[in-house]
Image 1 (cartoon, chains in turn yellow, blue):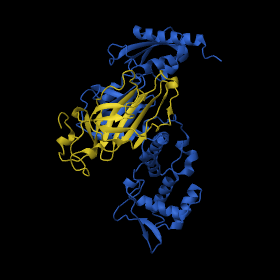
Image 2: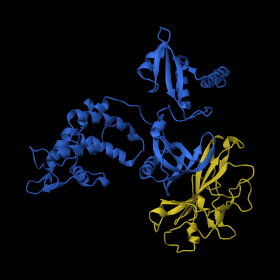
Image 3: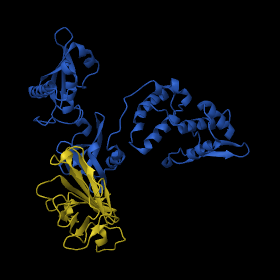
Image 4: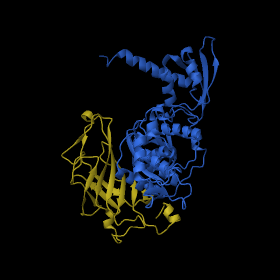
Length: 169
Length: 351
C-alpha cells in the first residue's frame, strides 16, 4: 500500500477482505465529441469484475436517444490478447434490444459484469487477498474493436493507482 | 393507518393468559378460546402452536425469548418463572397513562410502516403494540384511529437507508455513485458519513466528501450502489452538525449568497388574512413579529440562512407574504415572480 492509510493497516494487518474498488479510475478520454458516458467505478472481488457507468441522455438525439450493450463486450489486460467477456449487465439491455429514453434529461446508471481480474493475479487464486495489488496494471474495455464513436470503448483504464483503490469493508 | 399485525395481538393475549395468576397453566383450548373471544375471529391450534414457538425464539429471530413450558400434569402452558422471575413480553412496566402516551407515539410511527426503511421496523412496531397490550378489539376506541398523520410516500433510494445508518453508527466510510440533477453528471463519491437528515420529506446523507473536501449532503434518491469501505474514518470536529441545520428551512443554500452559511435577518410583511396562522405556527423558531398598521398586518423577522426551500415557502403564500429585506433576496423573488407571470400570460399550454 503506497499512499492510502487504511484502518486495516491500523487494526488488523493480516485481515483478509472481500475485494476492493477503484473510484473514478483514470483512462484515455472517451470519444472527443461526447462525454455523456462516464466510467465511474470498478469493483474487483474474487467472483467478478464489475464496472459501473453513468449515461446522460442528450438533446443531440430525438427524445434523448437509446442505449444498449453488446453481449460480446470484453475487458482485456492492456497489451494482451486475453479477453474476459461480459457475463452480465445490470440496468442496460443486451443489443439488439435497446433502452429508449423519453427525453434528453433522463439518465441511466448501469453496470457491466466480467470474470474476476483476480484470476490474473500472481498469488493463489482461491484465497482471499490481503492487498490490492494486481498483476494487471491497466485494461481496455471494448464493446467493438475498431468501433465507432457510438461504441462503449474505453482504453488504458488504470487499475493500480493506489490513491483510487479502496478495500471493501 | 394499519392496525398492529394479528400475530402481535395474539402474542399479547397469550402473554396475558400465561401471566394470569387466577388461572394458571392455560390449556391450548383456553388460549384458543381467549384469542377467538378477544379478536372475534377463529384461530387454529396450529397457529397458536406457531405463535408459542415464535415467542420462544430469540430477539435475533424477532422473538421474545419467552420461557414458555408445557406442564403435562395440567396439560397447560406456563412461564418458567424460576429461571425468569416476573417474565412478560409486556416488560415495559408502564402505567395506563404512560401506555396511552406510548400508544399515541406508536401510532405516529405506524405511518412509516409503508416505506421500506428497515425490514425489522414493522416487526418492532408490532412488538411495541403487543408489549403495550393494545387489542384489535379495542381499535374503535383506540388512539390509532383517532389521529391521522400525513402519509409518507416511498422515496427512491430508501432501500439504502438501513445500510447507511449502520455505516454512520459504526463509522465506516462509504463509496457510492451520485447523480446531480442540476449538473446532469455522475460522480463516484467517497463519504465519511455523519448523519441522516430529513428535509421536506426527503432524506439526505450528510458527511465529509473526499471529492469535495468538505461536509456535503446527498439526497438518497440520487445515491446508487453504496459500498462500505475499509478505510480510516475522518471524524467531524466542527460544530454539532445538527446545529448547522437549525438556522435553515430546507438544505439548499442560494448560490448567489456571499456568506452562504451565515444566518441573516429576513423581514417579511404578512397580510392580516395570514397573520394569525403565522403567529400560531411560526415559520421558524427564531421568528418574532410586531403589529404593522393596526389592521392586523404584521411584520415578521426571522434569522435564517437563505435557502431555496425558504423562497419556495414564501412564494407558496402568494400575495399574503412579501419579503422586505434583504434587498438581494427580494430582487431574486421579484425576478422569479415576474418570470412566472410572464409564463402565465403566454398561455403556451392553455387548452
